[in-house]
Length: 284
Image (tube, rainbow, N blue to C red; front, top):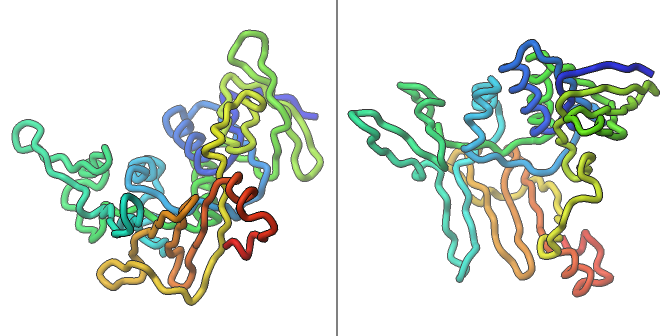
């Protein structure tokens, strides 16, 4: 059993954990950052669409241009059927931008609070500079995790954090772990970031849940399905389609030229009370 010390231990290697580890190493290059991830990447995950506000972070990580040049479907906005009637309306990322004057002739492009002129630089000629991305999470998450490793984080895949014990009244914790090869050990860390998502290792038994948000999703991938919306007739650019339904909502958008991600979200109580005996596939 190994015993070691780190300046920071990150629990979880998804987008939150890998982003934090990468940024921490970038701005504190002498810090020892250890990231523990129970899976080995690539691994599947749901949640496959970004927003333009993430582009500044992706640029800071050094992966924005890689994503822009990739075959990830560019997300031009969101089309909703949501509100008082069934009339579709669209949050169009290309028209969200506004030009404001902040003294002199300085132009600031504002999209959801982001100054994209600083991000993209002067003379940017990209046709869709305000787009986001629909991503296959297996590829996207691996890109971010590998980037954290390249920036110097000690990334340990196949390593599960078993517990985190605070040292007295200090901010230090002792993290115990085991890997899929049967090794185990502990790390004393001055700072711990819990990015384990639903596992919430550091706050188990402490969270307060809102029963009104006790939702779940049934989802799948479809081939040969029609695109709801395309941008300029191009199948590599599209909008996400979201529609409210009774007791929930559906999503429908492309992840590739012949792959749609489609899901329906509803409250667990509605499913249990009103759809007893209906299997998930039939419900979907």
